[in-house]
Image (tube, rainbow, N blue to C red; front, side):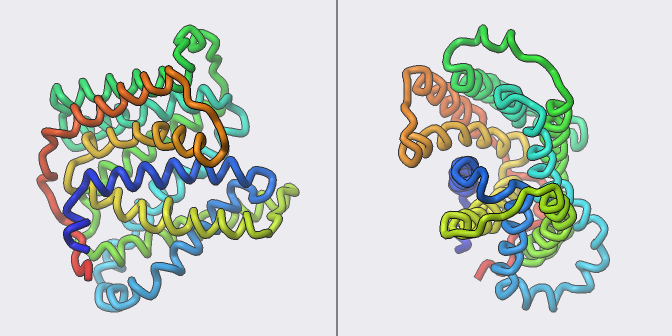
Length: 308
């Protein structure tokens, strides 16, 4: 287990693949599982799945947890809870193209947040990687016709999508200063925070008439999102940010549309075109260029102790 936690690039690749799968699953259960209900259930089950592993560490570290509880709650709201919920609200009133373009700027906003908040200035290789990755995402989402960007119009949902990205960027930067407790305790507290904070949102969704239709597809979707995009991926992402730093780790978010397109082809029968290949090449080149010289984080307060 320790060997895996010391391979940040592998952790980030698995994370990007899981988050891409989350997009595919979310698409597949539209009309069956309302989005905010899915968010609430995924974090609730992720918390319950983690409890047996985390319980011994929670008992041992409860004083440290209570000492830094406000900061831990802040991180749980900012990362696991806030990003997904804001994005769900954004999609109600924004076009998919707008949302994708804004999310493609995520790695650059993370780098800007790291620079402004922590003085972590990206080097030339990271800047080149961000530029190549961003161009690759634009090629994919505009299907090779960048002129379609001229048709973009701003609306309130875009502000929510941008707020979600900013929240995630700030969360990523703060990961390097999180309390020095085990990853088991940290993950449990932040997951539980996300689950509890989503309860009133899911209840409001139900009150508005968006009900859960429980069937095998819904159960599978909830189980997948609880285990892979939630339970596993956030632990992996948190550790990778610790080792690589925010800017270099953020570059791997460019891989989400690559994996998403491949999964959509395999699972949903969608077709790959030449513009996909061109975009993939730019994204992969950007990730390789931007992360190859990444230095380990200078602070290791969040080292995953007791991996077992």
